Length: 500
Ligand code: NOJ
Ligand code: CA
Figure 1 (tube, rainbow, N blue to C red):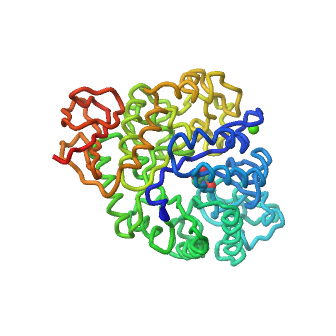
Figure 2 (spheres, rainbow, N blue to C red):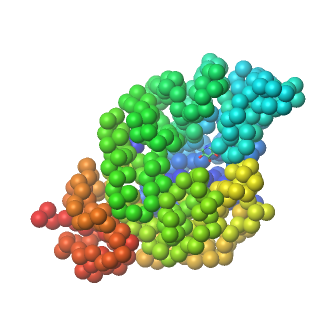
């Protein structure tokens, strides 16, 4: 299908933590190549690789030193090209991460001191940065260099922000896109997409200035010059639905991550409102919605759904961290959640490990935590290491860059593969069966605490109430828990609707 991205299921690989091919405790491309079958067997359409470029790893690859290579920790460019071909041979498309807002302080432009491609400014007074902007990772967004000037970094100090008013920056990124598209890459995920353009006077800190859209219109022209056209997917965190949708106009990006859905609490009314708002915002621009439960930046949803407070946002991650978690409940809800997510119209993302029902590893000792969100906030934010612990492939857990809890032996791929009741088996069934779901959704009214909708001949029902709910007599295609005549609490089902 030419517009495959409209309905695609996309699996996110975080290369450092997917599979380790050479036994040094760090995931790599050899490991991904050995374990491509796992992704094919899940029944997804594409893989999105978090950054694999040469990087000092100050932000684990989101600090790129060379956009046209592969970090030696992960492998070589030749291996990446082979991996892309092997994925294609298995019918999987390949999306890579592109990071336009900033690069590494080890990028040749920064090392050579080409200051006009960054945001260098004098301080506003001796010892004081040019303004009071704060880094997303905590602390001031400015770092002073030897001659007294300061440079802007909206993330870590090792990630200087690029100056998108400079034509060389624009030209280089369009060339980077071509470099990878020429090597078979099917699309890019655009990191921090709203932040690239700054107020020229550096007064207004608000991200998302209108001029940013010119960048993506130019990228769309590059993407459309390929056959088949390549795909642009935006990381767009914006509360205003109209400003969000503006990125998805027909001559800009194809899709963007739905972070409202990701942050939504496990609550029927809130979920229904979020779904309706999402569909309405996307309809205006004719773009498909995406549905995301987890990624490499957020608390894994098995853990979120096992807490009394099931919502997610960065500001309160620290406060929620360590709150009591009922993992059995969180897992049960996560099973129902994938039946909801996979039944919705549009595209769906699966973050590596959610198909195993991995929880957040909340008890990593401070001494092993490495994420700059943790270190730069002096521990106030636990950071993102807990969702980046390497996947357990077999019950013999190998030493890895972040230690796996011993309880993960039971959650390993080997342990789950043979078990038809496992989370892995449920994901495989849901992702394969969702290919039969077609067309728009229509809500069915089963009260405030049950999400129920029809798509074609399939009805999806998710019971978010504390009570059993009677089921229609239709044939169940897939259920998240064993069911009889009733749908138990926190359970989902897909029914074949006879049309009665
Ligand atoms: C968003 C990425 O998902 C995150 O992991 C990264 O730290 C920031 N952008 C900065 O690149
Ligand atoms: Ca390795």
